[in-house]
Image (cartoon, rainbow, N blue to C red; front, side, top):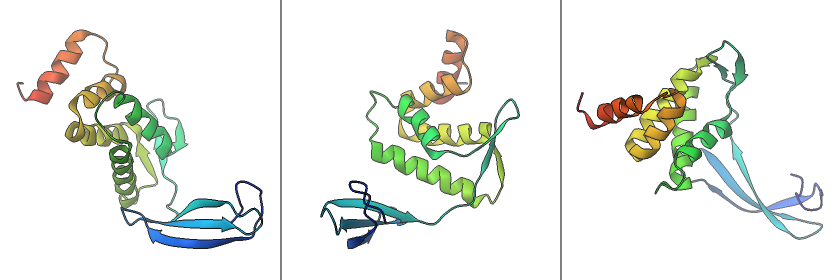
Amino acid sequence: MRCPYCENTDTKVIDSRPTEDGHAIRRRRECERCGRRFTTYEKVEESIIMVVKKDGRREAFDRNKMMNGIIKACEKRPVSLADIEKMSGEIERGLNNLMEKEVKSSFIGELVMDKLKDIDQVAYVRFASVYRQFTDVNTFISEIEKLMGKK
């Protein structure tokens, strides 16, 4: 493993333990040249999932892109980064468990909204407003009424 500080390739593992979710191993390493320490993560390499966009384009699934959308929806809300990472991990594992090579972006959006609905309803409405392209106040009201179970 290459040291991120001095680019030396001789590093040693000081500590190794599973992450909280058990799907990766966290390793503390020390560079044998500069003595600085850094953390690496080791996880199983998943197969590439292609996302089919609304316009028919295809691009590789990017967990970070999905997480950024969730983070924006959760801005100034009482949702921790740990909750967002856990949610993203669950969604990504669910996609990998489908054993499909291609998944529609709309399916991923629905998975995100299902998770957000349980975590924070304001974040859910924010995400839905962008994802479903709300055009007016009535659309917001309709979605909130669905959320509250009035319709």
